[in-house]
Amino acid sequence: MISSSSLGFKQTEIYKHRASFGITVHDDYQGKGLGKLLTQYMLDIAAEQGVKKVELSVVAHNERAIHIYEKMGYEIEGLIKMEHYNPVLGRYCDAYIMGKILD
Image (spheres, helix red, strand yellow):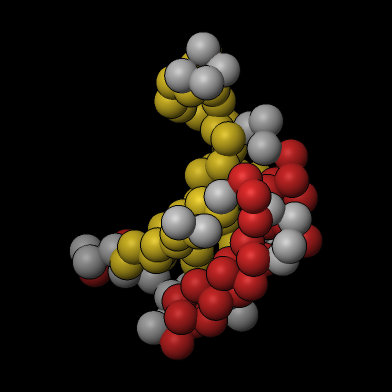
């Protein structure tokens, strides 16, 4: 698999203006613009559905992804300590919560 992405919509009335976004790009295909393309595609879908804010979680040491998200207008809103365990690194990893308000 080259990549996967998801866009989750909130169903509760008080949260339905928000959506959660996730993306994974295989190591062999990183740096080719695929992540940016998929991110923009998901933002377009969210806007078409009337979403006002898109949120995501990104591992704090993934500087490349953070840079791309910031260039696309996302802002870091918080940090979750020990968000998940990474067996490759053999340790727990922190994650940033990032958000983008759609115009």
